[in-house]
Length: 213
Image 1 (cartoon, rainbow, N blue to C red):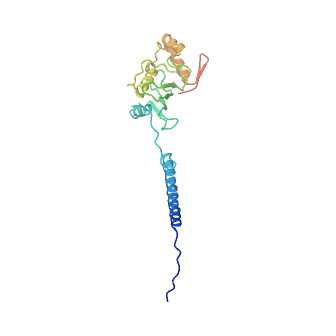
Image 2 (image 1 turned 120 degrees about the horizontal axis):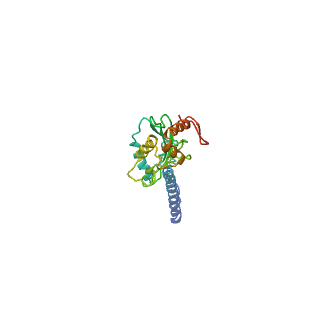
């Protein structure tokens, strides 16, 4: 025997409300999913997701990277990066002359490279206090290619060669230390003795020079 069960019919309004509710749920889920994906995308762009962002190098960094890769350093010269090799715009060159007045000494020069290098010469300073006609007591260096003779075709190698030459053949005619230049010009033997005394750690005319030999 079949029993007929009454199933109430839904009105059009109720059907529309059900459909609208389902649509809202789907729309809410889609918005939530989009929001999650957008946050993941932003996190990836910021490197939060583990992706390392690449810093754009300046023209100066690109050129100095090339210069450093092409360095032709002699056994008396070395390069170091106090701030790490990621900082190519700041490094040090150490020169240890094996002949001339300054033989046996160790002299450190800091190089600060402009972001627009090679259109601007590097700023070079001697960190080692030295008795030299072309280097003053504050470390300023008198080298023509660091001043008016600088040209973009020159390189870090060019400057290093110039610094090496200053130790082999000091120039008393273009001095930063006038007293040292006068002694070199008029009394070469006295100049040689003063250089040796300064490198061993001693006083020259009331100025103390730390040992660098």
